[in-house]
Image (tube, rainbow, N blue to C red):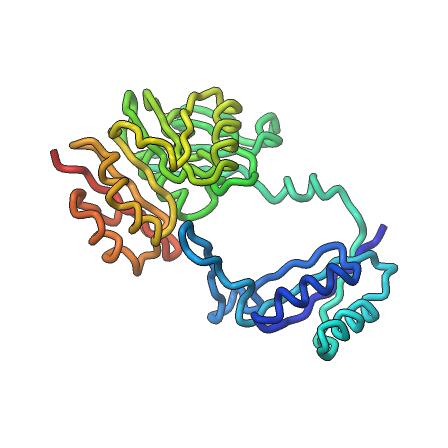
Amino acid sequence: MQWREVSFVVARDEVEPWSDGLLEAGAVSVMAEDADADSPDEQALYGEPGMPPPASGWERTRLSLLLAASEDYLELLRDTAAQLDQGAPGDLVVRVFADEDWVRRSQSQFEPIEVQGPQGRTLLIQPSWRVDDPAEPSQDASHAARLILDPGLAFGTGSHPTTSLCLRWLLGHDVAGQRVIDYGCGSGILALAACKLGAAEVIGIDIDPQALIATQRNAATNAVDVHVMGSEDAAPEPADLVLANILSSPLKVLAPLLQSLVKPGGYLVLSGLLERQIEEIVAHYPQIALQAVGIHEGWACLAGRKSG
């Protein structure tokens, strides 16, 4: 079977009406992307807990609809435009392609990730379908640990700068025998890494039930033990190390709690903030002398020790 993808640009306030209208008219799917991606005008849209939802689209949003190649896409666009009482879109980009094994194609996009730490220590992150691939590097003395992690519903496969910055910090510090809390655990990648690096007890906390399920599943896959908790549960006892790879707004809101979760002499590691937000975040953590320990692609990682 052959498919046709048709894309065009709309304004932000037209994203939802056009998306809903195209689906009602028979499109198999509709995808929205920043029309100015990879240009100086690119915009980042991030949703944060406790904040209003982000805009439904970008100032210039590219909508891409998918339908069978045998379907009349021009008629579908005309019908949708008529329903919206608008003119049919122009500057169409049309692409026809054959059906294929989409699962295999999706999997091929996720390559093993090797996170480099100090003194040559590395952490290897592999999707499960690449673990037994003889062409892939095997775990050896240069790898401090190996994680098996598949992309899923929760954030965190090691590819994002904020995650890799936290992993680099972990590789550079001895967490053996320590009690660790991963606040906003997502997929559980930081919690899993702490386990693999010798932590005695690891707790993963998240507001999203799907994240807790993902963390438990990934812990089982990696044969480690991570105790998961919802953010509404009673706070655990203070730990030797608290990791929080979230976003700037929750980092500010959660500052009193995160500081209280670090025992005297313990470390707090924060990421998910932009380089320009460093001073603002540091000001919210008077109990801990936070300093930037890594910056990558505009993202920053802060770490500090609690006096005691």
